[in-house]
Length: 342
Image (cartoon, rainbow, N blue to C red; front, side, top):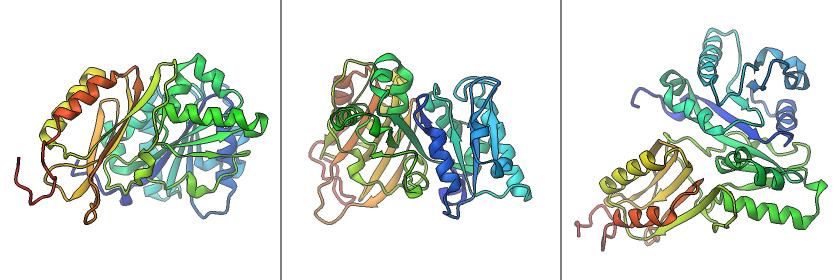
C-alpha cells in the first residue's frame, strides 16, 4: 500500500445509502443547494433503465451528475463504478471537471459492502480516492417493517458510519425512541441524527472521517460505546473490551482466520486497540475480508489502556470471537514499549 498517497491528498467519497423512500435524494439535493463552498460530483445509481432521480436533482449541476442505471451498483456493475471513478478523476486532472469530492447515492436495494470494497480492491481507485464515510438514511415510519422483512435494510444500517433518521414527524416520540434503540442493537458505533426533509448540517455528512481504513484516524472512543440489544433478526452486534494488551502476531493471525471463516457474514468491525509494545492506540476496522490497522493518538499518562472492538454481522458466534480474542491477550503485560515481555 506504499504507493497509495496519504488520505489528505486523495478525493474524499461519501456513500449515501438507505432503503427505498428513506429520503436519500432529498438529502442530496439539500447538500447540492447549500452555500458551503464544496465542489461535489455525484454518482447516481438507479435500478433499471428509466432512472428519474437525476431529473429531481439540480439541473444546473448536470455536468457533475453521472447516472448509472444498468443495474444495482453493488452487483455486476461494481467494475463499472471503478471505471467511472477513474474517468471522473481523469476529467478532473485534465480540467474538464472541477470537483473536490464525490457523493455516491446507491439504490434502495444496495448492499453497501461491495461499494466500499471498490475503494480497497481496485488500486487505481485507491490511489485517487479515499472513502470518507457511509451515511445511511432510515425512514422512521417504515423502517421497523423493513427491518423485519429484509436483510438489505439491516445491512445498510450495520455498515453505516452515521445514521440519519428521517420522517420522525410521521410517528410518535415513543416509536422514534424504540427505533433508535433497535438501531443501537444493529450498529452501536454509529451516531444517530434526526433529520427533517434532509435538513442536516453538511459537516455531519461530509468530511467526518468515519471510514478511511488506511489513514491515521482520530476516533472518538464514544463512537464505539453502546450495549448490544438483542433482536430476533439476522443482523446483530456485540462489543469486546479488555484492559490487557493484545499480542500483535496472535491477533493478526486470529483476525485472518475469522475473516476466512466468517467473512461473508462479518459486515463491519472496528476497534481502538491496546497493543503490546505500542504507546499509541491502534485503530482497526474492516468490511467482510478487507481489513486494516493504523496508529492512532498516544495513550495519555495514567490513562486506562482499554481495547474496545465492535463486531456487526449476521448470526456471528459471539463466544467463539470472545474466547479467541482472549487467547490473543498478553497476560500480565502493561503494554508499554519499555515493558519486558511476560
